[in-house]
Image 1 (cartoon, rainbow, N blue to C red):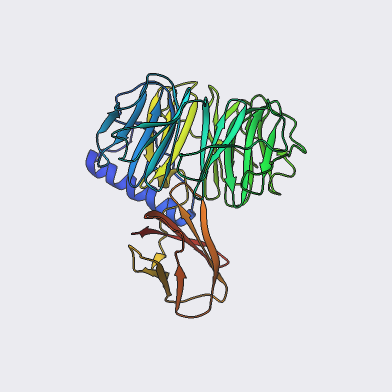
Image 2 (spheres, helix red, strand yellow):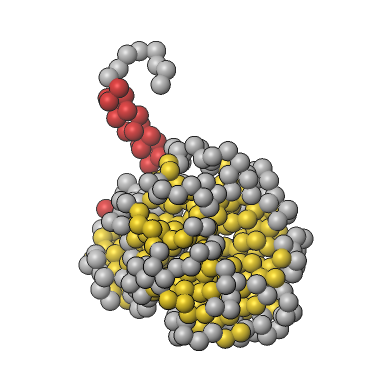
Length: 400
């Protein structure tokens, strides 16, 4: 670093860190550092990332890798076939993996795998409640029994539709297609309907949902926003350097767009503007996957797996005035109590899982202590946010 005065290098770094932290707290602006490559010894495409407990699982064109104790990476080979490993998802501790021509399942954290179906060319997997949805070439399937049986679910849509991606928001399930836009189901996949009003580009490569709205990434049309649960769409591309958006991911209100050979972009205002966040990433890279694993964000690229501290790019850091409320017990069992020192008349709470999905929300009554039941919450890391009408205060929550 070029400076006009001499200072001890270690003290200089300490001063800079303190200044950056204070600025981010006082102004609530984010200071972007750089992405770093993980120790994963694989430089090819990272096609998908999932979290099982506290461990990260990466799907690649050369198999699966699992991070052990937040340090070294173990390649998973037992029971796997040679081929392109497209996607991975976790349901109740079991790992489901989609490859070209089969769905695999592991019940021992990836040490061994068994084939649960050999007829699918899997493009995407969604865990929705206790069900598993699979996007396959030309068909959609669902399993209600952890992959033992699979049911075809194409009612209400053309048979030969080319399905690409799937996501959920509350009770709705959305599927992106090539050439036919977006289809939606509000009855757990039993029936589907096309929902393309305002969607001027029908080649939908990825769909995600933040706290409020839906976002669709397209091939050649950029990003489209829906504020009415997919009934209508509006183009939101200000700041994007390319309109080929192959991957989208969200955490709370933040939304990320992975462009084809254009890197990664973020919006913090529901698509009004996008900001490039490609510091120290390979040039003209293509993002394939992202996941939140506190305290880091992992990013899968065409050139391997990268990471950076989550507080640099998503608003989940605990605020300086976090002492305004206390959560106990933490780790929690079946319920938690929220105790306030000075509670405003109107406060609300929201609880999100590690993937950014809203799990529970509600109002807090004007008293010193509120009890919240964690019905249906699986063991793991969550984020609870309190809004008092003026600011949002965040705190991490662990469910036993």
